[in-house]
Image (cartoon, rainbow, N blue to C red; front, side, top):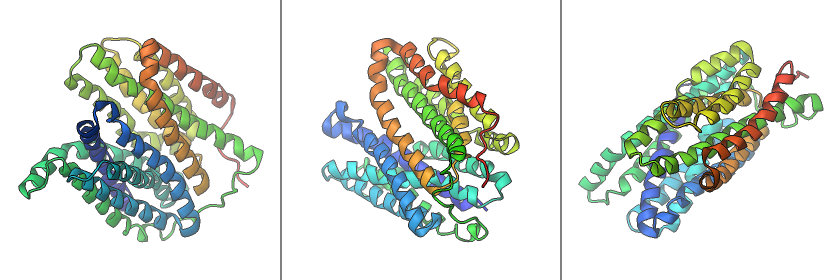
Length: 377
């Protein structure tokens, strides 16, 4: 039942990774290395804005149509990146990455589409399947970049255009996959009332859930944004950096089915508590060099997974889902921009202290509550 949703999310993830990597290289060649991060910044901001847009489209048109519009915008964005790759100025590249970010937001929010497609008892497992699709996208996107360059050069196009054409094709296939979701959702619940959590008793667990998701994202992005700087300063090669990033990505996505099963079985509270605790443990481990550093990055990824899915399980309205997702990605932009500077000031210990400031208060608040469940009406 969830296959079209999961396939679309995986394709969008692959498209975003391929376009992000190549846009960094292209911008470095055109504008210089100091500006190479601009396309990815545009993509992050597009994801933040896209989450709000998908929320509005959902309120007016329903989840499925909003999802399709998001992927359609992503196709248009991919097309703009191709223009720059074949010789146009860089402005279309930035606009294209922003619009690809809108498609990325649709893919991220599709976990709630999956949740509505199954009985309530399997809601978290359904969401975890969509998050797990990130594993496929993270592996498939980079793996297909070199073949895509070989293909485009064989038909007379610049090699740099290959990954961007790959992104366009992947997002288009995601859009096609989304057209098969209607039958999947024939028995789904309608989009819930936006004021479902208006009372104080309902608002507190929702705010805690949102806080956990934002804290998990901030800690992860802040620490991971400093890892390339750290490896470069210590003379480590790209091979070792690749192993570190792969271990982290594996922690983020690969164990999602386990997380979903755990939430459905035990509720979000123990999952969230574990996630917050692992944020602190992983932040401590990455302050150490040697053998514990890479396992610490894996734990950091899984801590994010627990916080992200555990918090998501508490959001039950399209309005809240889109607003929290938007805030998460806006916070990501801030963390990514400030992390390298903070690292140069005090290294990973400074980032670990900031992580503790974010995670410890939430850990105490969640631990003091007997349950994170939203009270029923």
